[in-house]
Image (cartoon, rainbow, N blue to C red):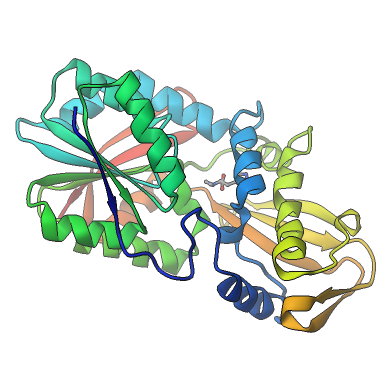
Length: 334
Ligand code: AVI
């Protein structure tokens, strides 16, 4: 096995451990809390504590997406692999690979079938890529791994320039759902611009379903998702010297069945003022005023197909779990 690590030049607003640069974070917080309808970006959920809480969320009984995607990959791995692999060598590029728990379902099958490929996990976290390298060396020693530490687009650009062979890009976990509509189009169009005819994109999407299933997934009984949402205020306290009282804000998720969007808010339970030292500014909150913190889009298969077409992809195959709650969609470059 060959294991290599490529460190790409990183955007200075993001540090090696994945945390945001204080100046960029401060600017976004100032902008978001100065709006009439206050908002903070879900991009900032994932500091060390936020990442730990998200790992916990993925194991909650109410949080179905992880379980469903696991079922999709396990139940269809042979079919998926045969569609990825064809007869020629390819690069399997995993955007936001992390610990690659779900990707390993496919890697084991590719290894078993002795397919010609190398695995290119991409992540902003150097620590995560080191750990993954070590782990793969132990668990799947025959696989060629070329870990890339960097941002998605820098990594795709580097791959585009340096690797002429066929590419299959993975974007698992319905991360696409956390983008605004125009952001997801820009993101997929940009991915498309680094691919060639015949290359593929394999993307996880959470499907539309009963609000009775969706809502508890974002409002679990044990309060982990509430802690995950509130941690954003704790992060502002720690990194920007704010004095948010976490007991005076409440996690409040709402599902809009017409738009198919799960929206999370932090609602101020009383009139209060919060001072943020790094901004040298005090923000007023009315009683029951809300800060919007996250969108999680749920899609119909028709919407996913249209999104793909808009961005230069056609659907080659759709893999779903038994209850049709989640889909992994295989797109081919048009
Ligand atoms: C990372 N992302 C796909 C998760 C989601 O379902 O939108 C983040 C999350 N937010 C609350 N629970 C999980």
